[in-house]
Image (cartoon, rainbow, N blue to C red):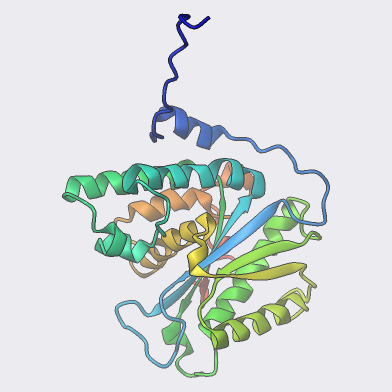
Amino acid sequence: MANEKQPVQHELPLFEIDEENLKKLKSHNPQSLDESDFSKYIVYVDESGDHSLQSIDENYPIFVLAFCVFHKRHYSEVIVPALEKFKFNHFGHDQVVLHENEIRRRKGAFNIFKGKEHHQHFLNELTEIIEVGNFILISATIDKRELRSNPDDNAYHIALGMCMEALHGFLAEKGQSEKKTHIVVECRGDKEDRDLELEFRRICDGNNKQNLQLPYEIIFSDKKVMSSGLQLADLVARPIGLHTLRPEQNNRAFDILREKFYCEGGRDSLGTAFKGVGMRIYPSPKSEKPR
């Protein structure tokens, strides 16, 4: 009837990073994917520091490569929406790439903060998403000072081999080592990308410590793609490097990442048995157990 009252249509509220959202992030338990030739996991890669040996910054004489390994269902159903909604809250749109360096220096799109309190609130929310999101972290840190005597070495290639070896161990534990696993890296330049792909193929073809054929495929992603996985990898690489350089220094970001590392003993050993396993350093500290 014309005079009949229509129900009020309430607008959906903007996303808030509240307890309910965080609980969903933490408790999400992705169901198994249907049988496929593809792995259940996808890997996003980023770096911290310059891999060049021609000039070494004595304040940061290391190169860090970080692999963030996500279960695809958890990544697509929980991680991506959480980051997108986080951007809508703080910027009003999602066309922002989260860069650790720019966030820390408040540059570019991150020159929006009204003061230290606003900036800290932004960091706290982003940190909380990382803390409760489920992903496995694998890293390799190269002390470039140890490579000075052989300038033909490549810090990136050494780190790549170490991370791919650890990744194989993780995927084998999950019964996914025979499936095709995609490893996504950010484009850096034509020559750099060609050199990296060549080294990647060599490692996959058996040029690794265990002489294994690895069914991995490298994907080069343009920065404009704004991949959530690549953005998270960018956020975790530097805290790992700073912890390696100055382990005694307070490092809240690393303390949160500690329980993300691939480790021996499964979930029961999270945060303790990761050094030399999921977190690798070259040259290896004497205290680490060789693998």
